[in-house]
Image 1: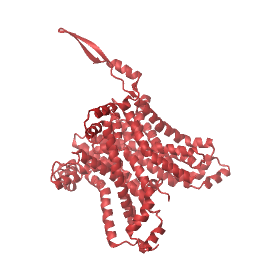
Image 2: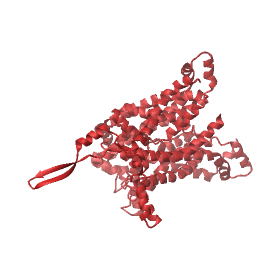
Image 3: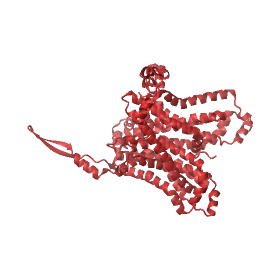
Image 4: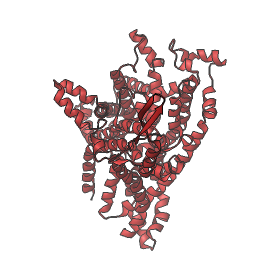
Length: 293
Length: 342
């Protein structure tokens, strides 16, 4: 490669640096600010008089005797029963990821290996299903679920989230399995394996990169969902996101507002850590449909 | 793969999708044709020393019995679709006849709940998408020039707004622009107006929501553009360089044309995702001035004691029709891709 081609002028480097810093401020600062503010009392985080109070913890010092406090965390986790919500989120996320990967790998493998035309129609149907707004599906669930008396419990929500997640998982894994050479399992078939055996012993050992990506997206859907969990679960079974919304609903006493702030931090921190480790997979999944490499 | 094997492989996922995506849409449609049973009224004669009066009261028992027998309510045909809260044909007809000018007619129509929500939804969609594409492209170009060591961290920082759920993302911003939060308070000081609040006027709230939309969607555009930039062929760029093209010209005439298909992809996905805008309205507590179609459905279903299944179903169906319009180009594109692959 010609080195001159990639040599940037000084102005460009400076301008670029400033722009990136500016952009990073916009994208990261709100989270850092919330993290910082969650260790203050409400009078500081929302201080009308002087915004520097949020930095110095002026009122926090008066109210608690120190410039930082974990009061909001302790209260929201125990008094506000946020521990129950995070437990529910864990159950929902783990179940949704494992079930939807199990269903998704089987389906996507079949779709990638079948040469008949109906695979195309199934994929198109999945694309249409993926575009359906979740809230319209929820409006269809509620009535039958009330009649069947399965509303409000975790298993129902898990199955619903798995189903909502299937179209995307299918497409992602389908495009992944397309990149796994056909000869690999074809030779196993010639040697007398059944399709299922070929899948189990030949494909499964090599499919993990694709599965990790698909799993990451399933996890994000289950972890982040608000529409389905807020309307299909009862209060005791709320996961973290609807729980935070419920904290906001009761803003009469100031304490609860900080409960919501600290819960937002508690809910986002694990997600950011996971994404930090699986950033590469996330990006490869997002671009799977868009770019032909 | 033989049909039978294929069937068994696809069965679990297919069943899940049919039962929990296909059927709910049918069920939603079915609900939209029904309306909640009316309360049964009965006349009760109350006699006291001053004479007898007949009062009309709700017959709780009979109403409850009818509800038990007919939980979905009574059949209403397409009545819910045309009522005041949805397409409002009668109201529009009346407005057309009575209003003296076009703008008056427009005002009346845009104050009807459904059209109000539709207006916001479409404004949001079309105001958010172009800035997202432009900003995403600039950030991608900019990050692409950085050295490898810091790239990882910067990409991570850039995608944060996208990976948090819209509710949390909007709350985090909302707390900052609150009149007592850091940005809100600074703006008040800057304009020297202690009553200035982004929540106060409907225009400012719309702008806030749109800015939030751009903030939330740009990372997606960035990621896709960034990946696409890696596939830009180097030879034409080198050739242009030798021919004396400036950096701007190389980007304008080689890189951008190469990325057109990617930009259309981003645009379509962005439009489709933003058509379902709903969580930011809750996060920003903007229900008063900005309602979207999805929010209307949520509102109908939120009250556990009195869920308006019919109304929610009708709005859902109308939303799906809207999605269908946006989805058609995506389907055509996928169709063509499949054709060329085979």
